[in-house]
Image (cartoon, rainbow, N blue to C red):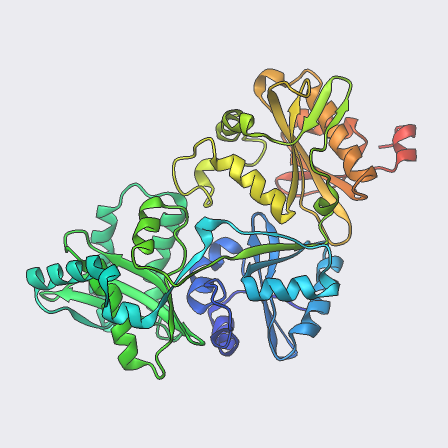
Length: 481
């Protein structure tokens, strides 16, 4: 069976030859991305038969990169076996259109569902366009560069080395003063920038700086993958007008003089849903947006029929609708109520701005389309307002699924949660043919009662959670614990 090793710097260096030959235009499977985000995504690495696959935690569940190397076909079989034996879902992340087509044609991966989010799509540019900024469509960029030259003279751009540690540290300190109101993802990215600079040489990265009177005005860090320059870091101080386009074009020019051959394409990664960043990246006229799909193979969600309605004893479960947006926003941002749900939107890296009524509604639609979860709004009547949510998720390759339920405080303690939880558990068992599990915080006595009342028995516990599996129908009838 495959063996996945925890991420380490030495292991990353070992797999660089595979990464450098990756034909995908996605930014995730790269030295810089893996180094910067391993702390938050639990990166694990597997080399088998001269073939590489990486596992990460994506959306709270394990997902794998599509195999790269000598025997990707053989590794698919091994990944299926690994996922089943370890009770994991078979999911693939950072899937571009070409890989998606391979998955769709692979009979071993039948029953797959997939989705992408626009905010995580990478921006890819033609190298020659950025080198020259020729043509009417780049007149704005040329004007900014000319403005920079007029104010500060001819751009001075050079590669940075470890001898530049101090000036990079001072630059980042000044940059932080200009950007005090960061969301979680921005904060994490900034924290990792200095560390990426420190290991850049070991990983074969290009680190460069734009100088004005010996002061660092902007930095860029990137790497070459196949025929693409991937830029991980682009930062400039606001006080230097035109620094961003000057650094962008200048960095590409610097790579052009140091790499042979010069990559045909440039990937500036995604915009994370930041409208200002999206506007800026679109102004450079990308030749393509690389949509990165999350693919879930063999998910029970594929069996769910549209417009499904479940009801029993005055409780109704329906699909979410646009009329639920405001209520769902309230449900997700109620900090006190979500303590025992294990969720705090303020620490969610996927929330890249102030959440609005579309934020969580879009998330449900995405998870549904990708086959990662089955969500129902809880109501007292089919056309009534939502009073809470039930979810079926954490699907595993050996046929299990986890059930969850949360209600608005006004409807707690009245039996609605017990009924809704039982209703979706029955649906999962009898319609989707899954083995049903559940968990709750050990201190959450009401949730424990809700779970046990619906025929679940405690199977294990850790420092935080109690874990349950549903008993057989016969055992439930006899009331066994």
